[in-house]
Image (cartoon, rainbow, N blue to C red; front, side, top):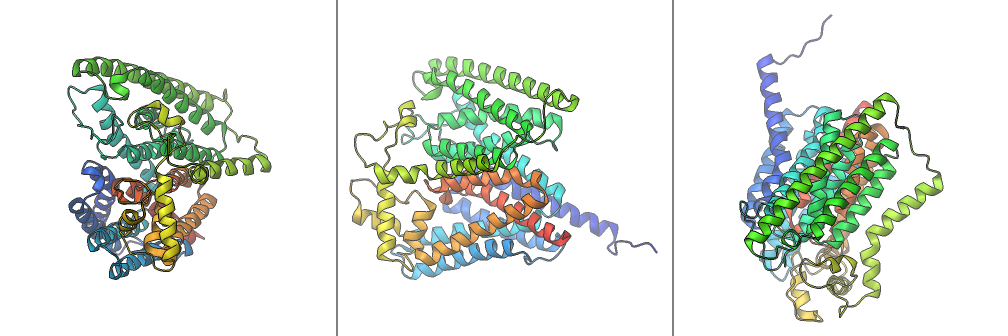
Length: 498
């Protein structure tokens, strides 16, 4: 007896084409929003939310298997985010400003739609394996555009904001967000370069692509992004402790360090200093050096790939004892928590870093964020259960600020959630993160090669979201949401197979 698909071939082909189109749109969303000022403003955000939920409707029709989540990980993550969105909506009843509260709810609706769409879209492994590459390519497009604005200023005029002070902030319009996006991209490219299941040509290209991403990370002068990328690379090495992966990480880090050292000597590139002719000359030199370094790194990566296939280079696991693994995880956690530790011992004052594109910033521990966090924690203590309402931190800051500065966000997803949505909102946020963590664990056990890169990139986002307002920039956070959605989808697929 032969079993056949009861659907007509034309109908099956139409469903497949519709599903493929929906997945492509879902992957392209963060990159498109990046060129709309990061999706920060209402118009772009509203359109993105409508598109996300339209994709949910399409994927619910064409996706294989049950629509509703079956695993504890998916239920916890999706349910946590849905409940967080509902709680933010309810908090408008006691929020001091209805406009900012509505903005917060709109963002949550967008993220919820993207997460549900991802959990439906990435169940087939072939599509799931493309998520990592597609998102890394999207970050390269955004970051590469910013780098070209420095190396070809006569052709690409990015008009940096005065607030950036020469730091790379376009096209997202915020330098720290550009740094966080570059950090995520750098970790993804490092993982792809060391992934034995990827094609050799892709691994070689990934090693080269990491260099402009690393250069962009340097040009943002973002200390939080540098700490986050260090955390992500540690997680990557611990999840994939093979000589193949370690060699690729070392190669791209050294290559990026080289081009960053050159950029630091060219003020026209590093800080947009001098006349247009001066910046064009230095930009052309920087571009030539960058291209040469990319070719050299690609050649070394190709040689290493050949050596692995021929047995000249080791590809087995790096011998790590249990003690070394624990030390590595402790180091990753310590790097992620370092800004919070500094907040306990540092005050606003003379040690604040100099404004603008200055290398001195990278060695400084001073930051006004510590004051934002203290106000947020005092607000949470005064309104422990429900907080002051979505978007209400800015009002509390104006009331309690220790120095004259206008601030809209607490510059920490976790502290701001405590202040604005209280313990209830913070618990729901933790449910979302716990669900994603459970999915990471499930997929690592079932298909470690598929989960390693996304898990390391999510570690970058989680670390950086603790020290900045990443949640308010959809172009950045949707990259993390897409990775989380893929892991939730694959956790569902692993449960079905089991």
